[in-house]
Length: 264
Image (cartoon, helix red, strand yellow):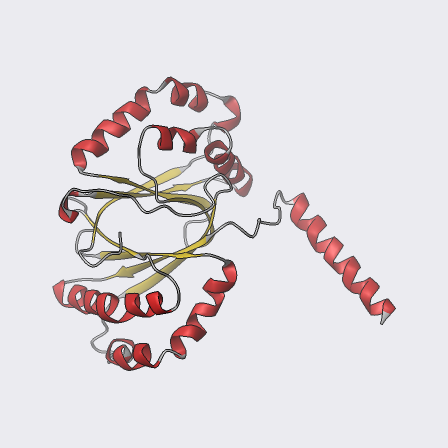
């Protein structure tokens, strides 16, 4: 038993050493994890099916599973993705809650009964074309998501989801650092971008990358905030630092409105 214990301890030390060499560190338990589901659709028929499933089946099941606030967003009318995608943002208190959710849903009889038509749809008439899933971990200086408090009509609100790809994993670490500890994230907060989350992508199709969601009462507020950001002396100084040059190789900008049944 002592020999086995020694072997286990040695393995644990070795694993931690490997992660340390790669620039990783054990995440504090308080950091939330997030999932972004992306339903790729075509046409109003699929959109109505996904909307009905999310509104009447999936979100109520998540609420019963202890996830009280779930965001659902759709591209704005002027975006080329309009009518082609539906984004679902799911916050988890811990990574374990994320891992346990599939089993929780399977044990939820109300969910399995209400969702069987959608989940068991005929292969000739699927409710969506593809389903994408992105797993993220919150930044240490914003460890939990925040629900914005806008009073404008839902159809006017702008939720901007951004993804910043990096050329290498090392440069991705530097970009996270630029946001998390060097001041970029704080600038968004100071300029009232009403951020929902900032997260490092742990699994997705555009890695290495980070993502964040900022919100605005309307498009006018969106434009004003971004103009203030670009003109900020803080941003000009930060973006000019040599250590953060070339940390982003491609940026994806998605302007969306919340669905009328979204929790925020």
